[in-house]
Image 1: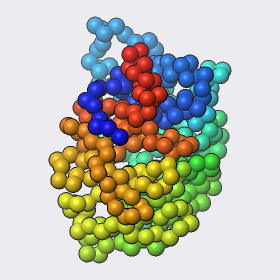
Image 2: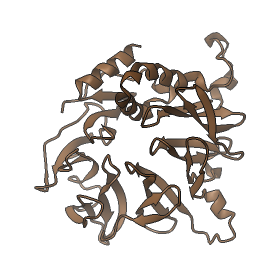
Image 3: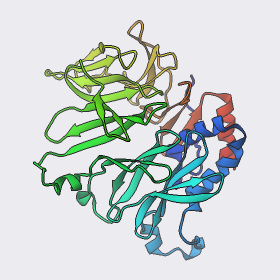
Length: 366
C-alpha cells in the first residue's frame, strides 16, 4: 500500500463514466484482446453515442441547454464485456439502453412514461437491476426510487420494491413506507443483497433476494441491536454489519461465510466515538477486513483489521487533503484489491497494480 498521490485522473469524469469505471475495467481486463477496442467505445458512449442530435459549437450554447436535464447517464459493461448498458434521454424520459458490442445494435430494455431510470448495474452477464426518479419533479415530489430487475434483452422485468408513490396509491397503504437499496450482487447467481427499511422503524434488514422470483431471506439472524451499516465481500457474501444497542453502543459483527454464525468483533461507546471504525471491504483470503476510521486524524483513512487476532493494524491508505472512507476496487473474480478512488475536489483513481496503473495513465493521456 502507499500514500495516495495528489495527481488528478479520469479526465472524462464529467460525462458520468467515472463511477462505473472500475466495473468496466474489470470486464475489459478479462476480455483480453477487446481491451483497447472497448475502451474508446465506452468513453464515446458515455459522451455522445446515445445522445439525440449533434452537439452545438461551444460559442453557440444557449442558456436553456446549460440548465436542461442530462441527455445521458453513466455507462457500464456486462461482466463478459459483450454488452454495454447506459441511460439515455429519449423524448422526455431517461431510458435504460443495452448495446450489443458485436452488432452495434442498441435496445431499450426499460422505459417508463412517468419516471426516469436513475441508476443501474449489472448483476451478471444477462441481468441488470435499476431504480427510478422523476427529473421533471422537485425533490419533495419524487416518487421514491423503488427497485427493479430486467434481462439484457428487455424480458423478465420484475418489480422488486415498488416506488413510494405506488405504495401510497395502493389500497393496502397504511402510512408505512418500505424501501430497498441495492448492496451487492452475488457471484454466479441472479440473486442480490439488499438493505430494507421501513418508515417509523429503527434499523435496517439485510436480505438476499432473487431478482426473478422476488423471494428473499434474512442474512442477519443473531444480530443484537438496530443495524445501521453492512458490508459484503467481492463474491457478494455479507460479511460484516454494524448495529446500535439499546444503550447507544456501536457493535461490529463479522462472520466468515453465509452459513456461519455472527460474532461480535468490536464495541464502541457510540457511532461517533473517537476510536470508532466501520468495515468497507475484505481481502481475497478473507483474513483481513478493511475499515475506515479517523483515529486522531482530521481525515478518514483505511486500516487493516486482522480477523484472526481481532486486531487493528497500522494505517494503510490515506490522502493528504480528502477523506478515504470507501471507494475500494476489487477484482470481481479473485477478490484482489486493485485500487481506490478518492473523491477529492475531483475523483482520483489510484491503482496498486503496475498493470492497472499503466492502463490508467494511457486512458488519461488519450
